[in-house]
Length: 144
Length: 76
Image (cartoon, rainbow over all chains, first blue to last red; front, top):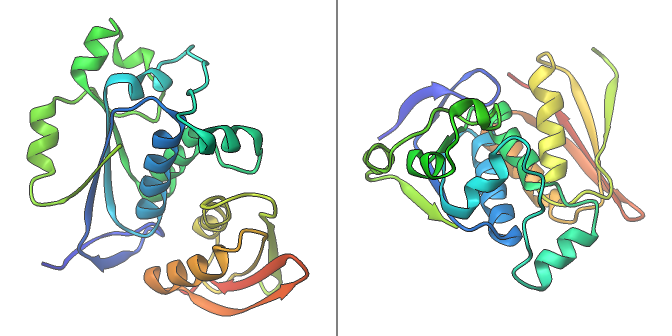
Protein backbone atom coordinates (compact mmCIF):
# COMPACT_ATOMS: atom_id res chain seq x y z
CA UNK A 1 0.00 0.00 0.00
CA UNK A 2 1.36 3.41 -0.90
CA UNK A 3 1.74 5.98 1.81
CA UNK A 4 3.16 9.44 2.22
CA UNK A 5 6.35 10.03 4.17
CA UNK A 6 9.19 12.47 4.35
CA UNK A 7 11.90 11.62 1.82
CA UNK A 8 15.66 12.20 1.95
CA UNK A 9 15.31 15.73 0.64
CA UNK A 10 12.78 16.69 3.23
CA UNK A 11 9.98 16.56 0.70
CA UNK A 12 6.94 14.34 0.64
CA UNK A 13 7.41 11.29 -1.50
CA UNK A 14 5.14 8.37 -2.27
CA UNK A 15 7.00 5.17 -1.56
CA UNK A 16 6.17 1.87 -0.01
CA UNK A 17 9.28 0.17 1.29
CA UNK A 18 10.20 -0.45 4.87
CA UNK A 19 13.61 -2.08 5.25
CA UNK A 20 14.97 -3.67 8.40
CA UNK A 21 18.64 -4.59 8.73
CA UNK A 22 19.73 -7.01 11.46
CA UNK A 23 23.48 -6.72 12.16
CA UNK A 24 24.93 -9.56 14.19
CA UNK A 25 28.40 -10.29 12.82
CA UNK A 26 31.40 -8.21 13.78
CA UNK A 27 33.38 -8.95 10.63
CA UNK A 28 34.40 -6.24 8.21
CA UNK A 29 32.65 -7.64 5.16
CA UNK A 30 29.27 -8.10 6.80
CA UNK A 31 29.30 -4.72 8.55
CA UNK A 32 30.33 -3.07 5.30
CA UNK A 33 27.55 -4.72 3.29
CA UNK A 34 24.97 -3.93 5.97
CA UNK A 35 26.08 -0.29 5.97
CA UNK A 36 25.93 -0.12 2.19
CA UNK A 37 22.39 -1.48 2.13
CA UNK A 38 21.28 0.84 4.95
CA UNK A 39 22.85 3.98 3.50
CA UNK A 40 21.71 3.51 -0.09
CA UNK A 41 18.19 2.46 0.90
CA UNK A 42 17.79 5.31 3.38
CA UNK A 43 19.17 7.88 0.95
CA UNK A 44 16.77 6.60 -1.70
CA UNK A 45 13.74 7.25 0.45
CA UNK A 46 13.19 3.88 2.07
CA UNK A 47 12.31 3.79 5.73
CA UNK A 48 15.30 2.00 7.24
CA UNK A 49 15.77 0.54 10.71
CA UNK A 50 19.06 -1.10 11.68
CA UNK A 51 19.24 -3.30 14.76
CA UNK A 52 22.71 -4.03 16.17
CA UNK A 53 23.39 -7.00 18.41
CA UNK A 54 26.13 -9.49 19.33
CA UNK A 55 29.59 -8.69 17.95
CA UNK A 56 28.24 -5.99 15.63
CA UNK A 57 27.51 -3.88 18.73
CA UNK A 58 31.15 -3.58 19.76
CA UNK A 59 32.01 -0.95 17.14
CA UNK A 60 29.41 1.48 18.39
CA UNK A 61 30.62 1.74 21.97
CA UNK A 62 32.47 4.98 22.69
CA UNK A 63 36.18 4.47 23.24
CA UNK A 64 36.40 1.16 21.41
CA UNK A 65 38.64 1.68 18.42
CA UNK A 66 39.56 -1.83 17.32
CA UNK A 67 39.16 -2.57 13.61
CA UNK A 68 36.64 -5.15 12.48
CA UNK A 69 38.51 -8.30 11.46
CA UNK A 70 38.35 -9.47 7.86
CA UNK A 71 36.57 -12.74 7.11
CA UNK A 72 38.53 -13.23 3.92
CA UNK A 73 40.13 -11.62 0.93
CA UNK A 74 37.54 -8.89 0.42
CA UNK A 75 37.90 -7.66 3.96
CA UNK A 76 41.63 -7.38 3.45
CA UNK A 77 41.18 -5.63 0.09
CA UNK A 78 38.89 -3.08 1.70
CA UNK A 79 41.40 -2.48 4.48
CA UNK A 80 44.12 -1.81 1.94
CA UNK A 81 42.13 0.61 -0.22
CA UNK A 82 41.54 3.99 1.36
CA UNK A 83 38.75 4.76 -1.11
CA UNK A 84 36.31 2.35 0.54
CA UNK A 85 33.98 4.35 2.81
CA UNK A 86 34.25 3.08 6.43
CA UNK A 87 31.11 1.25 7.54
CA UNK A 88 30.62 3.59 10.48
CA UNK A 89 30.58 6.55 8.10
CA UNK A 90 27.99 4.82 5.92
CA UNK A 91 25.74 4.10 8.90
CA UNK A 92 26.10 7.76 9.85
CA UNK A 93 25.10 8.77 6.31
CA UNK A 94 22.08 6.48 6.60
CA UNK A 95 20.98 8.30 9.73
CA UNK A 96 21.84 11.83 8.65
CA UNK A 97 20.85 11.75 4.99
CA UNK A 98 18.01 9.26 5.12
CA UNK A 99 16.72 9.39 8.69
CA UNK A 100 17.55 5.74 9.27
CA UNK A 101 17.04 4.51 12.81
CA UNK A 102 20.13 2.82 14.27
CA UNK A 103 19.02 0.81 17.27
CA UNK A 104 21.22 -1.08 19.74
CA UNK A 105 19.89 -4.35 21.11
CA UNK A 106 18.98 -3.86 24.76
CA UNK A 107 20.29 -7.31 25.67
CA UNK A 108 23.67 -6.56 24.10
CA UNK A 109 23.85 -3.19 25.84
CA UNK A 110 23.11 -4.89 29.17
CA UNK A 111 25.76 -7.57 28.59
CA UNK A 112 28.33 -4.88 27.86
CA UNK A 113 27.28 -3.19 31.11
CA UNK A 114 26.81 -0.04 29.07
CA UNK A 115 24.21 2.70 29.08
CA UNK A 116 22.87 4.79 26.21
CA UNK A 117 25.47 7.44 27.10
CA UNK A 118 28.27 4.95 26.41
CA UNK A 119 27.15 4.45 22.81
CA UNK A 120 27.84 6.48 19.68
CA UNK A 121 25.47 9.45 19.37
CA UNK A 122 24.02 8.20 16.08
CA UNK A 123 22.45 5.26 17.89
CA UNK A 124 18.91 5.46 19.14
CA UNK A 125 17.63 4.06 22.41
CA UNK A 126 18.35 0.43 23.40
CA UNK A 127 15.55 -1.59 21.89
CA UNK A 128 14.22 -5.05 22.68
CA UNK A 129 14.00 -7.83 20.15
CA UNK A 130 10.25 -8.13 20.64
CA UNK A 131 9.77 -4.52 19.57
CA UNK A 132 12.12 -4.94 16.60
CA UNK A 133 10.36 -8.07 15.36
CA UNK A 134 6.98 -6.45 15.83
CA UNK A 135 8.02 -3.41 13.81
CA UNK A 136 9.58 -5.63 11.13
CA UNK A 137 6.48 -7.73 10.66
CA UNK A 138 5.63 -8.02 6.94
CA UNK A 139 8.58 -5.83 5.98
CA UNK A 140 11.80 -6.67 4.17
CA UNK A 141 14.50 -7.93 6.54
CA UNK A 142 18.19 -8.27 5.71
CA UNK A 143 20.44 -10.14 8.12
CA UNK A 144 24.21 -9.75 8.29
CA UNK B 1 22.95 29.43 -7.91
CA UNK B 2 23.56 29.51 -11.65
CA UNK B 3 26.99 27.88 -11.74
CA UNK B 4 27.52 24.17 -11.63
CA UNK B 5 29.17 22.98 -8.46
CA UNK B 6 31.84 20.31 -8.85
CA UNK B 7 31.82 17.40 -6.39
CA UNK B 8 35.06 15.49 -6.57
CA UNK B 9 34.40 11.89 -5.48
CA UNK B 10 37.20 10.35 -7.49
CA UNK B 11 38.98 7.33 -6.00
CA UNK B 12 36.12 6.42 -3.68
CA UNK B 13 34.12 3.24 -4.05
CA UNK B 14 30.38 2.61 -3.99
CA UNK B 15 28.39 4.05 -2.32
CA UNK B 16 30.85 6.89 -1.58
CA UNK B 17 30.13 8.98 -4.72
CA UNK B 18 26.36 8.71 -4.24
CA UNK B 19 26.63 9.70 -0.58
CA UNK B 20 28.83 12.67 -1.49
CA UNK B 21 26.27 13.83 -4.05
CA UNK B 22 23.37 13.44 -1.64
CA UNK B 23 25.24 15.32 1.10
CA UNK B 24 25.56 18.32 -1.18
CA UNK B 25 22.09 18.10 -2.68
CA UNK B 26 20.42 17.89 0.69
CA UNK B 27 21.82 21.34 1.56
CA UNK B 28 21.19 22.83 -1.90
CA UNK B 29 18.31 24.87 -3.29
CA UNK B 30 15.92 23.80 -6.03
CA UNK B 31 17.55 24.50 -9.38
CA UNK B 32 21.12 24.06 -8.15
CA UNK B 33 23.31 22.07 -10.51
CA UNK B 34 26.08 19.64 -9.67
CA UNK B 35 28.75 17.81 -11.59
CA UNK B 36 29.92 14.68 -9.81
CA UNK B 37 33.36 13.35 -10.69
CA UNK B 38 33.64 9.62 -10.09
CA UNK B 39 36.05 6.84 -10.97
CA UNK B 40 33.63 4.23 -9.62
CA UNK B 41 32.18 2.55 -12.70
CA UNK B 42 28.95 1.67 -10.91
CA UNK B 43 28.18 5.37 -10.50
CA UNK B 44 27.21 5.71 -14.14
CA UNK B 45 24.22 3.46 -13.49
CA UNK B 46 23.58 4.03 -9.81
CA UNK B 47 23.49 7.83 -9.81
CA UNK B 48 20.86 8.15 -12.60
CA UNK B 49 18.83 5.44 -10.86
CA UNK B 50 18.87 7.41 -7.61
CA UNK B 51 18.15 10.70 -9.39
CA UNK B 52 15.12 9.15 -11.11
CA UNK B 53 13.87 7.48 -7.95
CA UNK B 54 13.91 10.59 -5.78
CA UNK B 55 12.69 12.92 -8.52
CA UNK B 56 15.66 15.09 -9.46
CA UNK B 57 16.89 15.72 -13.01
CA UNK B 58 19.77 14.16 -14.92
CA UNK B 59 21.47 16.74 -17.12
CA UNK B 60 23.87 14.31 -18.75
CA UNK B 61 27.01 12.31 -18.26
CA UNK B 62 30.27 11.76 -20.07
CA UNK B 63 33.46 9.84 -19.58
CA UNK B 64 36.72 11.77 -19.80
CA UNK B 65 39.65 9.40 -19.45
CA UNK B 66 38.97 7.30 -16.35
CA UNK B 67 36.61 9.83 -14.83
CA UNK B 68 32.83 9.95 -15.17
CA UNK B 69 31.29 13.44 -15.14
CA UNK B 70 27.67 13.09 -14.03
CA UNK B 71 25.54 16.24 -14.14
CA UNK B 72 22.47 16.57 -11.97
CA UNK B 73 19.97 19.31 -11.14
CA UNK B 74 18.08 19.46 -7.87
CA UNK B 75 14.45 19.52 -8.97
CA UNK B 76 12.50 19.62 -5.72
